[in-house]
Amino acid sequence: MTRQTISDRDWLGAARLGTREAAFKARAKRARGWARIVNVALFAAVLTAIWQERALAPPVHDRMQHMAVSVTAMIGGSETLPAYLTLLDRDD
Image: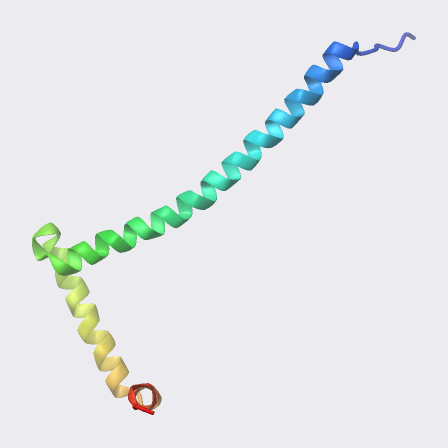
């Protein structure tokens, strides 16, 4: 049985390909990380724009207004949170 040998040129090409693949994977991982951050920022910007201008998406704006009232009612109904907020609001 004969053993197949890889010539120096082929070995360097295979090593370079492995390094290239590793670089591609690292770049793809960084791109996915940035894409997640940009996606959240874009989502927040869109919701902020809808909050400020009802004409952009009236049903979404109305639902956001309804949720704001609900959250305010929940905050006002709790005893712990208003006490905490008054502590934060004090001028020391």
